[in-house]
Structures are given as structure tokens and as C-alpha cells.
Image 1 (tube, rainbow, N blue to C red):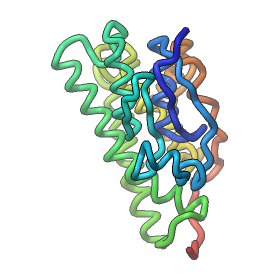
Image 2 (image 1 turned 30 degrees about the vertical axis):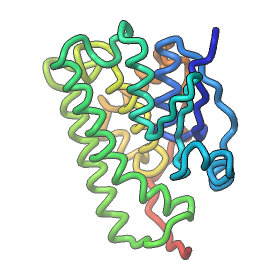
Image 3 (image 1 turned 180 degrees about the vertical axis):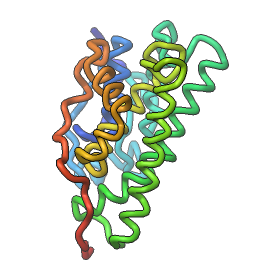
Image 4 (image 1 turned 135 degrees about the vertical axis):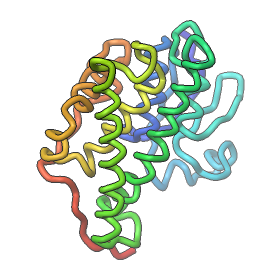
Length: 226
């Protein structure tokens, strides 16, 4: 099988998981060189391709360059429209975009600062700010929980089948398990966690969503000086 391009992403990065899962689902092969945070993306060779130094990033076999995880995932899905990952009509496509944006803006933007504080690479930690972001992330996950329980219970977010929305959401939930989903939170989100397990176990995803190292208690923070 010929490669469609080279993909630069971190192993456990939410966006990279989504991209690799889309590639697996659509049967597209990617070259995935090792990427070291703060090193690979600062080399002259990398910056010549991606001047902003963003990870993830994609270079197609034809030289096409692209950054931003959701955008790369959408591009790969669009290369194989028969997969149905982007929907079969404009309403399905709109709903898929809705959930992709929901995961990006209502979940990830609240999870990411907590993660950065948890690994000690960002300044600005306060317990109050952590709690505020935590509450917003849990509120968003609560909406997912309620939605999955509607209409007798949903297995997928859109059209009763796996789409890009599910791959993005499952990767985001994986990310959430690293910072805010302790046992108490997981127990309060049974439909969401069952949904996550279902997407993770789907053979079409190629094992790209791996088993999380579940927290017993959500990360509550420590001061970080940087």
C-alpha cells in the first residue's frame, strides 16, 4: 500500500489519535516518524515546511501541507467519501461539524490548560482557575451524557453510525481521562464512558485509541513556576 503522506504527531496527543484513527478507518497509510516535543518541531527542516512549528502536521505525498488536527482528519476523511465519516447529506455533515466543534471548543479548550499545568509546562496555575476549567469541562461532558441518553439511547453521535464526530469525541474523552475524569466523574457519566469504550474497541479504528491509565482522583493541581 502506498503512503498518502507523512504525519507528525505525538503518540498520546488527542488530535494525532483522531488523525491516525481516520487513516485506519479509511484504509490510508501514513508515514509517522517519531516526534519529540520541543525538538522535532523546532528543527530548520520542520520549520521550512511548517513555519509556526505546529504539531500535528501533515505533508502529503504530493507535497500538500496542512496543520491542525481536526483539519487533517477531515482532509483524510474527504479523500475517502464512501467511508461516510463526513456524512451522507448536508444535514449529517452539519451535525458532524457541530460535534467536532463542540469537542474542540467546549471540552478541549478547558482540558488543555489543566493538562499543561499537570505536566509542568505552563505558568498561571491557581486552584480557582483549575476548578473553573474543571467545572466547564464536566458541564460539557454532562451534555454529551444527556445527549447519548436521548431517543432511547444513542450508540453514536450522528446518524446511528460511526463518523468523524465520534472519533474526535472519543479522542477528547481519552484526553479527559488524563486530567479530569477520576473514578467519581466516570461513575457519574456511565453512558459517556460506555460510548468511549465502544468507539475505542471498534476494530475499524485500528487500536489507535488505546486503554487510558485511569485516574483514581481527578488532577487538582499544584503550583507550577515557569
